[in-house]
Image (cartoon, rainbow, N blue to C red; front, side):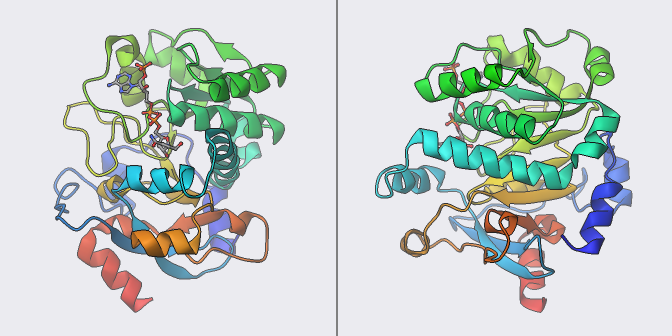
Length: 311
Ligand SMILES: NC(=O)C1=CN([C@@H]2O[C@H](COP(=O)(O)OP(=O)(O)OC[C@H]3O[C@@H](n4cnc5c(N)ncnc54)[C@H](OP(=O)(O)O)[C@@H]3O)[C@@H](O)[C@H]2O)[C@@H](O)CC1
């Protein structure tokens, strides 16, 4: 990690920024320009990525054709759901340690990991398992009965690691804010479609309303791969950990830190699908699985392509 990044980590604010603060900090997303980027028919786009361990920038694709990619991963490459969840969850946990070092989070209180009923929730369970192994203080919220063996196995492993479970989401957001220093959002992934079903509407509403900083896994809950939610409630995370390749919707909002986690797409598959992979590191173990997305990537189409050309 560069000195500059280390210092950014140490000064990481453990409260959620208001839109004014984001704007003052130079974030590119505010109410007037947040949606200025218009989606075109083009299916993939590229943006600048900064590799974590070195001060290099590079481009990678921000994808919309998520089903096609995952069909290749699970079909041609033969990856099982268990393998995806384990690798994605471990990589997400490693990314999380860069965003919120354990000591910084310990001062602010436990992390609440909110896991939904699908794969996104499965990545949340695997991430929680590794964060606990890394020594983080956390609590799990898993409001539904696991529907697949892979989720049940991870849930069992979290229980065996003595991770405490929250049986219901506090009715008052103040209670949430008092008890937790940070929330990891693994409620819904990119297959989610509004409206939220009644059983999880309250939980989703709390995540949107709380001022506790949120780190979302893959996409913020409520967002689809390629577009912002249409409803009035929008989850705005403090930081984002994209899995395997960033989704195009992440160009629509500014976050403090955006990591890409999970190096599983072979070059041959990327070439076949017309995807551009980041230039992953080759030396140390964490740069094998992590890339830091440059904030300028969220500036909009022409700006990110411009900065990619100039750097
Ligand atoms: N799909 C793929 O090909 C692969 C995806 N992968 C990764 O997984 C992530 C996406 O995971 P996902 O596909 O499981 O979606 P996700 O949103 O976490 O859960 C779906 C469940 O949520 C629920 N639910 C849905 N809508 C809802 C609503 N409106 N309101 C309330 N509940 C709602 C519904 O549960 P139910 O209500 O049926 O119990 C449904 O079953 C994605 O980020 C990607 O990286 C890879 O692992 C490999 C292959």
